[in-house]
Image 1 (cartoon, rainbow, N blue to C red):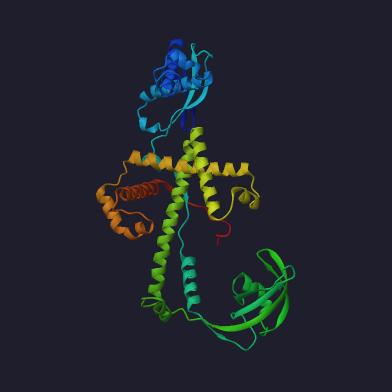
Image 2: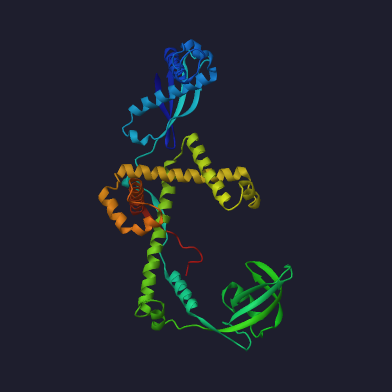
Length: 422
């Protein structure tokens, strides 16, 4: 056999191989022997029938496919022996093209695509540049304090007219709706409260007014009836407030606790975002692709997961496509894109683990189990079993690899949007 490693396509190499007629005939012999071991030939035990007899029970196309596959494997092994980093070659070769005579006794020409991956060690990840977004927890802290204020706010019935800031119960009947609906809101607060404020201010319980409002970009017109009105007693946000919501000495301590918690969550979200951007950038830089059979298998698996999820909610795939006005062809493209992204992420993670020697030994697993016992139990992972400890080890390795990637990449600050400019 003669072969040349030719065209580079992304993370793959196309090998051109030529087999002499003698080599092709030998491959045909091997293919027949393999078929003989599993084929039932009348009058013979499995594997004992003469190969000439076996050939009569095997279609020429099946035999040809088997010969081409064996030739592809030989070309792949020859290529593999010349590689300095054999671990990088991770998939079975994909046959691009083949030419051979019908009798399988002349020259065989073959093109095989071998998929490989560059060494994705820490040096590689340092060459990846991703955008970062600064962590600002001010708004999230204020939202949590507002939620605490809302939880402690009390109301008392009010006999007078509704005013801004009052809690009201209303009945709304739009011109397009058959039945009225009841809701509660605070006058002047939130999108709904602000929209109805001009009509509700000054209304007395039992009074009805005509309205015309804009909500979420849509116009609505109809009648609104004020059923009841209550005055809200909002507690002042001070040290007493802080002590009433937990074991805090003062408001400063409450804010500090909320800020620390929100900053921790924001940093985790930031880390996840940086990781995702790093993987996407690396996959694009390396032009990572996969053999057709890998893409198909991953797509089918992802589609099966979607069908199971829909079935749990009482929907079929056809109903989902109809309700969302999506063609099956478009869905398959989207599913394949998602599946390939997941494959790229897993491949890069596995390659980085191997290149950087990231492992989790028994001592590390024991420490992790002790620190995350509750989380592991909630996840249904029994770390007293070998399978449970292996799962915990996989989690540790995944987190270590993710952290190495995030800590290694070059981070640049994302440009401010028009809304963020002062």
